[in-house]
Image 1: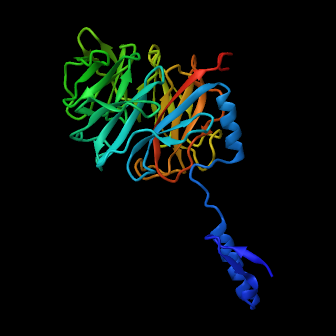
Image 2 (image 1 turned 180 degrees about the horizontal axis):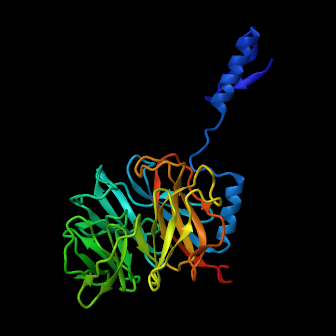
Length: 353
């Protein structure tokens, strides 16, 4: 006589089912019921080893926006793979987008949109969009600006100049500099953009505007210089003011743009051999504040930015050349959409090399 435990702890005697086929079916069904479901974001052994290796370079984490809970929320995971959690709080009828970390990694800003208005494509700005500040441990969430916009070239909401000052786009389409200590804002641009905001880099030498361009910025005149567009989307800057980076095409490449020489070149190509074959369609690049890490999303050749199975990757960079040093490491495995990451790493004592 052999007893098989049921999921409720009730014992089923196999000998109660004399027919061999029925007996096999019962045992098989019980085995399926007793099998523990595979949790979301469960990595394989190779990924765990890569996480451990990544953590040797310093103490860090990655944040991103995810639809896995049914509403867009900001999530976080340490670079050693630990502490996967939702970072932004529940807020009924709202979506949380555009997370961006402060240079010291202690806080981030994000935008709170009315639910269902997280449209990625360019168009009229949504009403009632608030710029929030929250600590990276999930505490202290508060509204900084009651009405703001995202940059139309992608889910970008702000540029941190330092740990106390940042640029954002107000409801009129004017770029503002916000001092967190005083709570006061001062305009950085004179001309309001009806549909598309302008983000200015931390060095205040260049700006991005839709379509993808890296424009010289004149702080005295509070204006940008018009220039021919580059093909692509999702432009942004490195914190040191040397580079711009953006998506050069659908699914790749992730490109860099030397702001001094105006030379463009790829960082990571679409279908790059360093990527898993089922995750080589690239989007949503962001370089860490020290220029040593690149975070981005990748999907199995799916494009839709709101529904596709994008996952988050992080790779080390040479900050002088903005070139990849290692194979990118995957940080999410959930079938929901994970996108627009940002990464922070406090380098190890040996220099993080």
